[in-house]
Image (cartoon, rainbow, N blue to C red; front, top):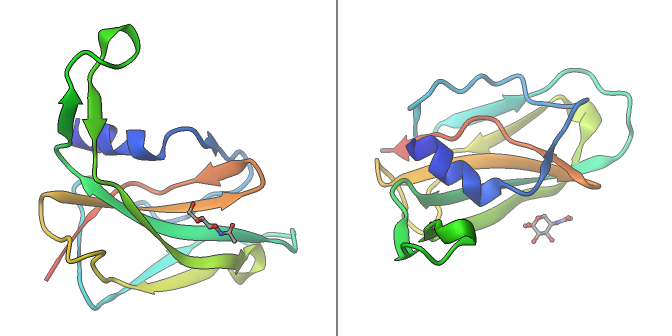
Length: 133
Ligand SMILES: *[C@@H]1O[C@H](CO)[C@@H](O)[C@H](O)[C@H]1NC(C)=O
């Protein structure tokens, strides 16, 4: 459920049919700060680029209004923060290495992290994860 909640942060972008990461991040994975996280993807023929970001948000979001959303659903605040890792990653690169680092000191069980690749009107994200020392 925690993962589904955080996914809502990234909702709104269509899932790509033709491009995705090979990384199968296990449910509940925790990656160590300072280590290399290597995102990989298969060979691509397209010559343009995608915008690679990493976001963090609360695993247990703050309920801003319990019934203020559509059809009386709750409105949450995930305290989401996004940083651009590289706005122009070439599809042909097949990998991107991120040295795991916290956004604003966020780490541990309270915070989920997620990568997002966006281009044109499409986007794709591997599963969310946590980071720790
Ligand atoms: C990448 O995405 C971020 C966050 O949505 C946005 O602020 C930035 O302008 C984008 N960069 C490019 C090159 O599209």
